Length: 311
Image (cartoon, rainbow, N blue to C red):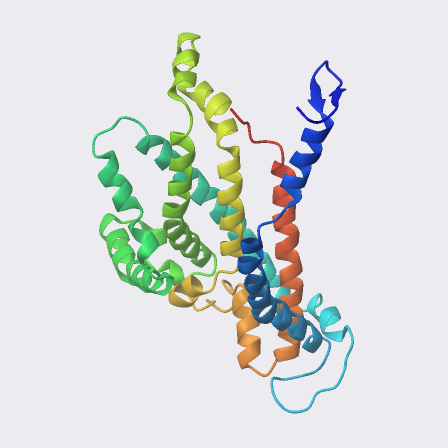
């Protein structure tokens, strides 16, 4: 050993020369790293950062999408918070995202637990359950539109179930439910795959040992399964909320935002403004929505930080 031996707290020893060499090795970055990093940063800046900054700039003007414009300051932002149509779209989007993420995660986790048990046809069932992942959202929405408008009312009429004899897509109080069902149906397969990966990574010895101690299946689920897949739950929740906040194609295929504006999401409102000569106002809306989405994502990470258990 060429370096000087040093005593460390706790009685361990190390060599100064060895430590310095290790730190130098850790700090050295391979040139290939920059070969991949720099083009990625340039593309991200050109197609994400710059357009976002341009949009924020136009949100401070009265620009309608073409022609001249003048600077308005924060007038568009002030008007947003007193616009009932905007506030209604935020209320619908946030409520829809909350309900759908709970439904999708609970169903996906239940299916993953069932499919990781020793049951017959588990592999076949996994294949069947992931089929919705490969189908376009707008196609799924139009298929369910037919089912909700024709098949479901026909069945409800045949069995005498009054509340569903009329299409729920035309009911302002129930139309949101159809969007929750279709969105959850479409996203459950992805969450199912993530949960399956998490569940299969848990050693079976833990379950066997807890069973010998008398733990019930529910106690095993609460004390072993949930803590060990907390990181997977966080990933699914963040991805789910992000996707649900930007819901657009499913609503277009099911309700078109109606009846009235009962199912109009923030994304639909923003896009409608872009094509309706309300460009600057909806850019302010998009900027606020970006901040809201970022705050929700950060809150999710902070709330679940440190909850995952490592083996």
